[in-house]
Image 1 (cartoon, rainbow, N blue to C red):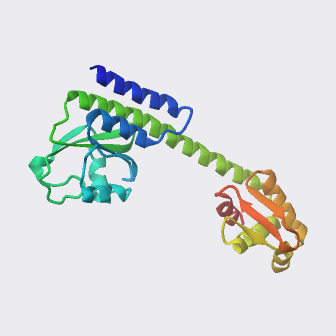
Image 2: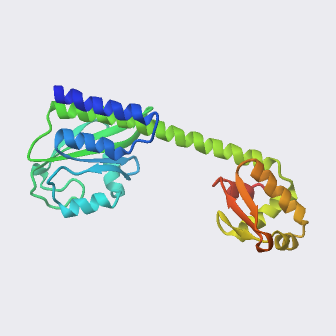
Image 3: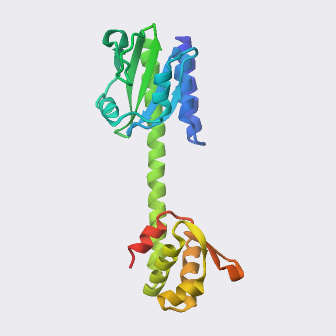
Length: 256
């Protein structure tokens, strides 16, 4: 019981730290692996590996290759995502590796634990241990870790959604101030750049589009003031442009 309490406190500290700084998910898998002497893998809802820790002394090149590929086959992830409560599996009965389905005589026990947050399924923990079944204390700690991880993933996901909304609002406000000719000029600028940054000659684009150079200058200034683009004159070489908001180019293209 004392060891269980110590490990839950470690998880609590990670959760508290995640409110102030980015916590690497491998820190979570490290805690579980150390507490249960097991391999610990954490996958997101798409089957991408978020964190992994192998138990000391564990050796299986094929399994390590699968894990090191950083994602699992879609059909495997689909099966994992269909599991909505902790499930214990005994590989010694199936004689098959859980992740590869290859024949395997290794005496391995697994725990599959769904990870959720905000009413959504966000990922899956897989715990694997050789020679010893998982007991009730293991399951309690594992499910607590899954809950903590779910909260962290939900906060991270919410932050990404908020950031995406903020970026989209910024480019929409910026493009709403542009005239028709300024939008047309910017579309040619982005075609010329062919990416998020590069050099261009404003006078050449003005001639190609059939507008004055001042239209291009005004368009760039508006986007700069909105914080979605950076531009810098390099004299005879032209103007250096760098897009700061990755939604800007697509928004300009559809603003015509």
